[in-house]
Length: 114
Image 1: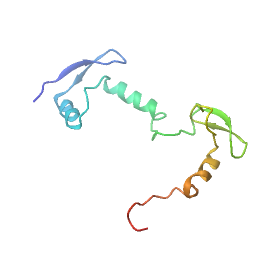
Image 2: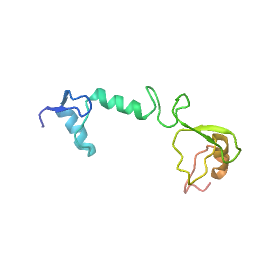
Image 3: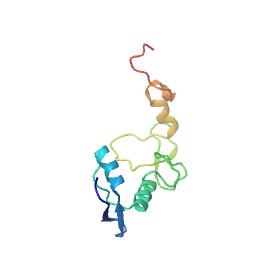
Image 4: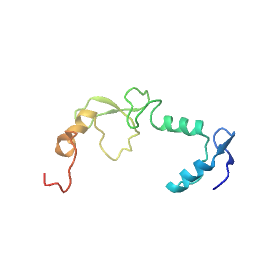
C-alpha cells in the first residue's frame, strides 16, 4: 500500500496530506493527484456551481449575467452567458417554447416502445 504524501496546494500554497486511502480512491477512478487542498477544492466547486448549496447550472439569484433583448418577444431579459452575436438569444419562456416537443420537461424514453 502507498504511503501518505505531502502535496502543495496550487491555490493557497499550503501543504496538505494526500493519504494512502485517498491515493487508492484516485487510482481506482483514474484520477491524477489533486492540485488543490480539500478546502480549495470545495471553494472551487462552490464557485463553479453558483455558490454554497448550489446544484449547478443557472442561479436565478445571481447578479451575474448579460442583459439582452429576446429575439422571440422583444422583451429585455438577463442570460447567464455572454452572447456571441452569431445566434439569437431568447428569454426563458421563448427558449422553452422553441424546444422540440414544446419544452414540457418530460423524460425522453429510447427504445421502450413509447
